[in-house]
Length: 254
Image (cartoon, rainbow, N blue to C red; front, side):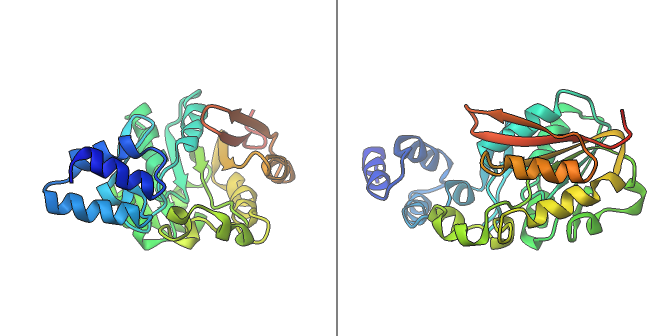
C-alpha cells in the first residue's frame, strides 16, 4: 500500500487527519506487513498512539500501551499552569501513561516526581516514562508512601470526569479502546474529583498547589469542590488547547 492509497483508506474510515496519520504509520512501521496490520487496526478505530506505541505530549515522546488512556493535547494546559512556579515534590495522580509527570520532570530535572494509578496496565506503561520505583499502584492516595504527607508541592490530577451515561457518546477510539476506569467519573462526572480534592490538604506542603483537569461545563462544580475543602479556586482555560484546569493552594499555605 502506497501513501496515497493509505490516505484514501484512512479518510474513508473517517480519520480526519488522514495525511498526517498515513505519514506517521509509514515512518514508524518496520515492514510492509506491519504497515498493513497497523492500517487495518487504525481503520478499525484503534487509537493511532496505541498502534505506534507513543504519543507526542508537551514536547515529550510518551510511551503508550493498549487500553491505557492516551494523553490529550488539552492536558498540556496542566503542564503550562504547573510550570509557572517551581516544585520540588510532584505527584501525578490518576497518571495513566505518566505523561504529566514526565513532562514536569523535564521542566524540573531535580524534582522528585511520583505517579500513581489504580489500573495495572497504566502503572506498567507509566513505568516506561518515569523512574519505575516512583510509579505506584493503588487507589488514589492509598498508593502514596506516608512520608509524602505534607511534602507535596504540586499535585496534578487528570481524574476521570466523564459522566457514566455520557461514555456511550464518546468517540469509539476512546470508549472501545481505553479502559473504562480512566473515563468513568460516576453519575455526574465528579465522583473521583470529590475524593481527590477532599484528601489533598493532607498531602500538600505549605503553599502546595492542586491542579485538576475538568471540562468547561463542569468547571464551576469542580471549583465548588475546592472551596468546600478550603481552597481558593481559580479556573484556568485555554481555547487553543480546549483545556480547563482548576487551581488551588493548600489552606493556610499562603
